[in-house]
Length: 368
Image 1 (tube, rainbow, N blue to C red):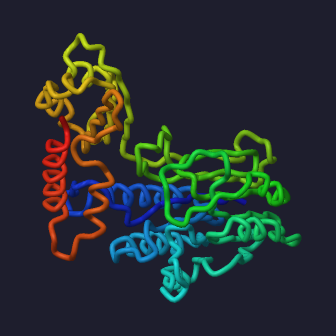
Image 2 (cartoon, rainbow, N blue to C red):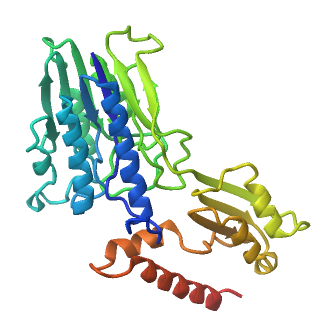
Image 3 (tube, rainbow, N blue to C red):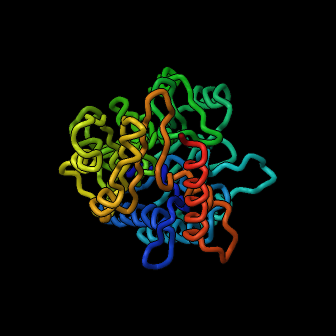
């Protein structure tokens, strides 16, 4: 029996004031492309089932486009006879039950087992998946893990869970996110595999517990070199090298670099040299520069922009002596803020550029 495990697809995620050739927010399109690539690869693998460990969507009220991409992917799996178990993550869970849940739509698909209200055991042939959806209360979540028990009549038992673990690094801050004590997983030691979601880095914690990670890099805090999902072959022994295999998907390059001004060479030359052999085509690049204010004001920005023209986005963060980091040009947070609040028909790119100009004016006013 083989099962594919993925998580944190965040369909509907938007960022930056960049549009694709189809007029879609480019970062939103990147997320869709990564998801579609994963579906294509899973179809080629033809596993017995797929487990999605939460945060299918970026929001609990996804756009029609995000919902359409999800339904197309799930339909393709259903048409291929591959059942799917998907649990709600913190992004997919509304704060109030009265809001309704998008998983009510997913549950209408015959091959999709959507779990969002409470823990549920799903039986698919000889496979049993004990699915625990997002719970904002760590104590309640820990208790749900404690109560989880394998099905003794199943050949393979999987625990699906969306949570952080105390002591592990997190990628950014998320509303409703929750972490539990890593020792909680010891309570579920009898499961053949623990399919974890929430951590965006693909990571094996032990021989039977893994974070699948996100399919796209969503913040500069995400330093994962490769993105994708896992395939678990339960016909192999637990410690066999090929039992858990990682499959990569195409993701946009993201580079987070830092340098300290040496005070000798031109600052622009140092910034350009800092990227070295890094591929800039279509990449997201952030460079943090420790520099004196006078040197920063003399920066040849035209030369920097010319060199980094192949990038999708360049972000410079000067760090002055006795001063906090300041972002030059639009940060991802600005683009996301504007995109989330723009009304239908409004040009998100134009609104973001206006916000940039206002921030630049404010920066010039308050800076010595």
